[in-house]
Image (tube, rainbow, N blue to C red):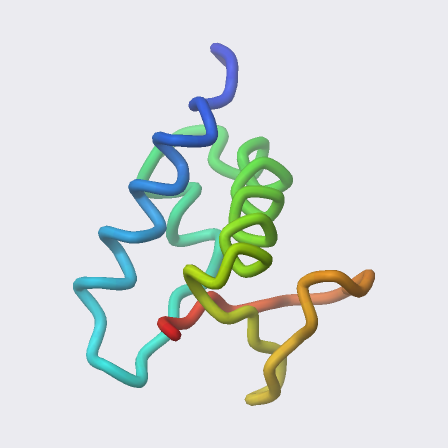
Length: 85
């Protein structure tokens, strides 16, 4: 597999996929990874998650887990969703 997409490309994919969802909708980081790389998308998940956390820290999106907002400054485990502000 080639190198992971740069963070700006990942952020653009996150923004585009969120914009395509209904107002209260959310996306899974795996959707972003699949959008960027149909094959070997799982290898992109750490990069997608890292970019999403940075976007949440800068107020561009919300990180959600089981319907609750996560603090992007705190360690997190398990599946997360990405939602509009």
